[in-house]
Length: 76
Image 1 (cartoon, one colour):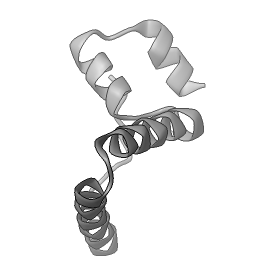
Image 2 (tube, helix red, strand yellow):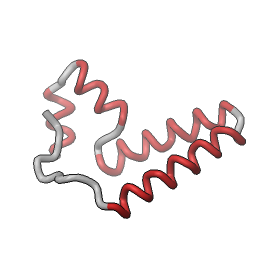
Image 3 (cartoon, one colour):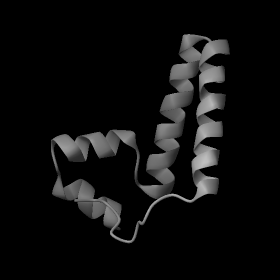
């Protein structure tokens, strides 16, 4: 399991920022070409992997097929 045991929920400010980010994301997806949208998503996923060793791809992978090597890398 790779969840944080010290996590107790989001603050109101964090929830509002999430909603604003979602609105901006939907707007960008509407106005950008598909290739630019895909590149932006992949770029943010790569940035998240690099900076905090987490992301949607790792969460799905660890949910479907838990790997000790990834768990050790995330803990490092």
